[in-house]
Length: 196
Image 1 (cartoon, helix red, strand yellow):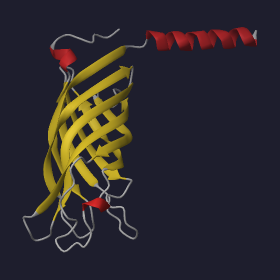
Image 2 (cartoon, one colour; image 1 turned 90 degrees about the vertical axis):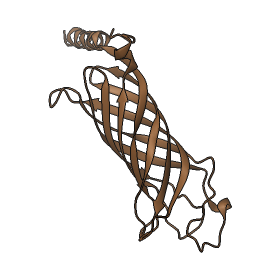
Image 3 (cartoon, one colour; image 1 turned 180 degrees about the horizontal axis):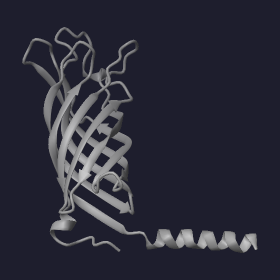
């Protein structure tokens, strides 16, 4: 009897997953970011732009972004900034919380940062060159967002660098980035990617 009840519970659970709503979302994402790399320096601002894709099952989702931006820092008491072109690829696990607020969600995940053209010196009097710069870095992205029913997607996130920007001992040079972005789900606009 216990085995029959266990099988029945398992079947109902699988059936519930199968009946859950599956939904795709794809669209552009634009915003502004503020980044810094080292103690004693100030944050500099930069543009963020790219595309996102999300696959959602019920209140759980996975999102992959492809974002073009710049990361760097601003020298204190100066208008001079060092900004490196960056291609950021975050993979985020998202949890929607409709029991709190309909479109509210939180997310966390790893991010790959690719720097194709690093040429600025670390500081003006630096004695080492661009060969010491890492072309690829790893960050952890975390934050919260809100998805409106009509497709607008707002996010605020913090990216914490895991790897150092410079391949030298005794130097801690990790990216610290705040970003505020707005995206739009084109599936909503063109009536694509309907829920199943």
